[in-house]
Image (cartoon, rainbow, N blue to C red):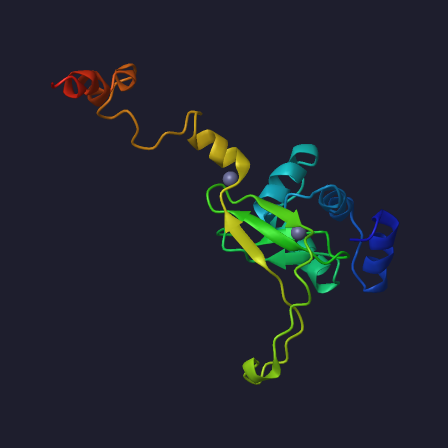
Length: 175
Ligand SMILES: [Zn+2]
Ligand SMILES: [Zn+2]
């Protein structure tokens, strides 16, 4: 994504009006690396500019995508995610649990689809999406507050007295 003067110039060249609202959205996007959704951008933007509407956010995002300054990504997280990092080709890591999206600068070699597999398509882009569980979600699962169905039959404390271990010594002394 271009810097602020670059974006202002680009918008003017294409006949779009430059409003304080639009510039505010530009500023938020330029500092964002978390691939926010339109709603997230709106929530962030409206904090400092209460006159902003969600509709303006959607329209501005659409214009930036049309002008090639923003990527919209459907990564299966339930909503479109926006990526201002359009200059450097990269892939993505997607968390199935919280929907977090991280940039991934790993060289996967050239992703070339051999002609016999193209089925008549003219392919113009390709990317790799790695899915899994992010570190924060994993940490939550192993020791944090998130313990699905745990301790239903074992109230806290009882898990430290496994029945099997108690019986092992007597079983061994059977002579
Ligand atoms: Zn996660
Ligand atoms: Zn990205």
